[in-house]
Amino acid sequence: MANEGIRAASAADVPAVTAVTDAAYRPYIERIGVVPAPMEADHAANVAAGKVFVVREPGAGRVTGLVVIEACTDHLFLDSIAVHPDAHGTGVGRRLLEFVDTRARALGLPEVRLYTNAMMWENQRIYPRFGYEVVERRVDGPYDRIHYRKRLV
Image: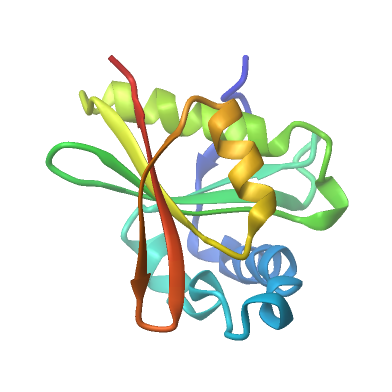
């Protein structure tokens, strides 16, 4: 099952959430010229609010990936997805994206929305493969973002 092993993060997971987020986004600092927003998020508050879901290595090993999601009135917002670089190519990202779709459907939400920095061109190849379409490109403060949506209906 794709969602097996994905669970809501607990307070004990906050250091791992921070570490995986930092490891996943750190390589982009130089490229985009600013610290990516997920690295500056209040991970403890997001975990306490039930917004963070983690996946661990098989056998309850270390956290290898996570998503930060928020249910809105008409969509599920995927605020952040982070996969530890050591776990790239192992299917963790795919499993997390499938989990997000499942979660949105379970909440009765018709679509998932997200954005990525325009300089994170790898993501611009990944998201369309999972059914996301570009909605707009918009500058928000220091961030040049491409907004996506995936209709689940």
